[in-house]
Image: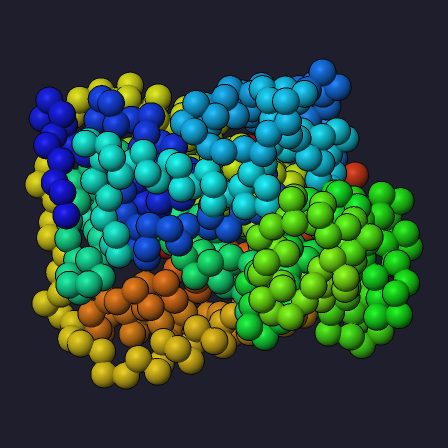
Length: 546
């Protein structure tokens, strides 16, 4: 792989994750700082490339910052931080312009603002979604990835996975804890290297793979959230896991998302007999926010004893569907479903992690030198439920502010970091233990911590997670690490964070619905978990307003 030369003797900034958040930070930093980007699988396998709908831009004459903030707050069910929402909305046009300048091929409309075609999605008052047909994430990711690959000051390390951030604890230093670098596994050569860093940026995405059914790629194992938690950072709002209402129900395509924009353009949700059902659940019908639509589908499936419902867009016409949704049309047609003539079988699936590592608007975590951006984080933007297409916008806006803050870091003298110690471990004897625990964890999370929850189910899940954690910790302490083991370790950490957060919320709000607490409280706050990392102390949990 190409090796970059340090700029003025600087340590590199290590960015963990090669999706939109990580690439945005890298491109804003690389003119002045050496950058290393770690991707634990192929460079094109980030969740960004799976995003179909688009990215919010307050651009039209019929739109305003206030309107976007209101829609974000309405979707977030009372837990959106208004300052965060307003800051990101105010920079949305700038973010779109930055992507256009990079060459992202957004769908055009000569009469539209910036020459862009804007679409509408559930929860939005007006058309404000810039998109590239129905493959926006892939279009954005391809353009930025090409630019990053060409940049002489950015080193891309494919099939490298972070193990843990290196903190003062590893150095046995009596000081305010800070981040000095990261231990990273070279997957192909099965060795762990010590990477000193000016700063470490967690941009690893969400935790969808903790559930049996998800729209997320295999990379979504909560690595950044788990590493930050182990390093002593606060974690917020992990009970709010967004289940996308419409994933394709097909044995050959368990993770194929049917974009919300298809409903935004007039698609209907129907029962097997052709009856539309959303009117019984919300006056906005198919354009209600995702949490409401997902619960409605879950309710109808259980009520009628069916495995899926139907999303019917045939009335929109073949020409329209091919022009605006070519990816969905082609993929479904390859599976024998002609969406221009028949409805699409759909089912909810885990889609987006609305909580994560607590950060400010510069990506700063509780640990100096450690930053986080994108789905890995809790910034207050998404509250109890994410408004459609706000996620890509958050990556671009806060990716830039994160880079600016890292640029302003003062010089420091770094100590020599300890090498990874494998003197007390050996090669694993049986990988079946990892596979079995992985399957069990994802199944229990789906059954006990899904769209509708009860206290008893959550308590059962937590009990089993503790047993799994004990087995995984023993395995981790005895054998050399590999990607599957590291991902399982991170998933069990995130599963516990989700369950503990859900148990603390004694109400139903947004994406968290409890049969034991079906009403919303008059006043509610974010759920923030705080870990006490001093020797001999167990993690503590607190609900705080941040």
